[in-house]
Amino acid sequence: MTVRPDTAAAVPAASLWCALAAAILGGLLLTEGLGLNLLVVAAPVVLAAAFAARDAGRRVRPWTLVWSAGGAALLAVPFLRDAGWPTFLALMAAVGAGSLALHGSRTWRGAFLGSVGVFGAVPPGLRWAWHGVREQAGDVRDRWWPVVRGVLAAVLLLTVFGALFAGADAAFADLLADILPDLSLESLPLHALFFALVLAAAVGAARAAAAPLKWDRLEGSRGAPRGRLEWALPLLVLNGLFAAFISVQLAVLFGGYDKVLEHTGLTYAEYARQGFWQLLVVTLLTLLVIALALRWAPRHGGRGDLVLVRSVLGALCVLTLVVVASALRRMDLYVDAYGLTRLRVSVTAMELWLGAVIVLIMAAGATRAHWLPRAVGASAVAAVLAFGLVSPDGLVAEQNVRRYATTGKLDVVYLRQLSADAVPGLDALPEPERSCALRDIAEELAAQDTPWYATSFGEFRARRLLDERPVSPGDPCDNARVISLTEYY
Image (tube, rainbow, N blue to C red; front, side):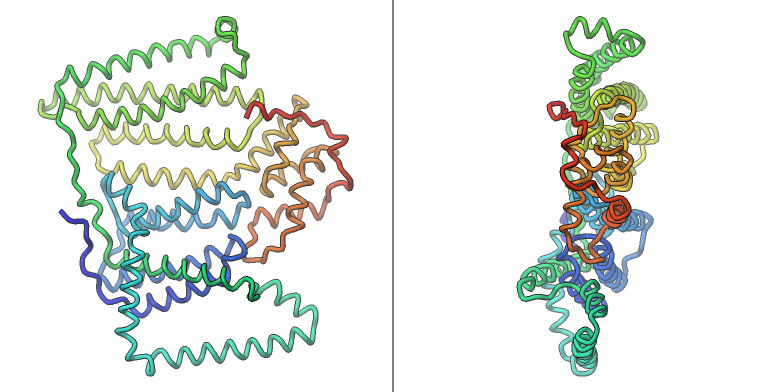
């Protein structure tokens, strides 16, 4: 069955106006960075898609609201956080959630392809919008031309009188410089690029909302079912291996560290660090094993096959959750020994999300529900959102400052690389360690001239704290107790 969409209705004029407004706002506001401007630009894009879906007769379904709310919440992360890595993840997840809201996919293939399907809607969306403009060109004199004249007149008046007022008062000129975007000749190519990109995104979203691709229609072979012995024997052996590993972990957990470390020759922290990465890979491979096992699971023996599949895979899921707990415990030991870093926060968050996925698989297997693909996608959106809201750089700073208070160990070399989100946590350090850790961040913030709409709350809060308590002059790191632990990252 083809995935090609139904014939799209004519593009509504409201969608065209919203796409144009989004493109103008994007060209003006997005060149200086990301902050509140991202939400401002996204609003007309959403309206363009909403008007197109309404004219196409598409109804708003519960999962559409879930994906839309998740995408909107993710777009708030760049406004709240200064760090680039949670912002990037939030943007990618927001695009995926928005694309799923437009396509409404239910199957695994549909959810995967639907999360990136909006990109495929851009070329037909541009053609669709162009045809719509040409069809409505006959109404330019009666409907569009008065609006164009009004806009041009408003721009002319604002330009002339704004320039006169700016020349008459320096304070007013500074206010305009802070509020208005930079429209110098050197910046025009960048403004034009963002105008084109946002316009393409807006018309692509509207086109997908009016006539989405039917990704759920993609059919694939499930795989020939295997006999009970051929299917169950490898999994039973794997379950036995998991059980043996977990028994050793329980023995170590209840006081066997000294014996294990003496036998392996590893230090306490090396044992924790080495095990975490292997256990993370085990979790990932287990999900792959479960997917392949379901593909070849016996399904023609009635209730007996159903009980076998649930029992074997359920046991594997339970054992995997214990492995996840063991991996998280090892990371906790490792952080106690060497402190928290961005990488350790990231992989810990990933391990927690994988554990949540396994719980969802168990719930779906017990109820034979078909909501699992969308639930896994929603859990990914929630995980990325929580990752951004928790402020990873701030968490790293706070944990290392607490550790310094108890152990006297502090890797200022690493902490100086954090973003402005870390300033509240680093501000609690004593001098001169505080000034040493904050010096690079303070210099970077002082060198920035970011407009208000592209300034994150993290930057604003950091500037306020540094204004209240500036860093010490000179080179405060000369007298700071700096201990570098970079070899353990």
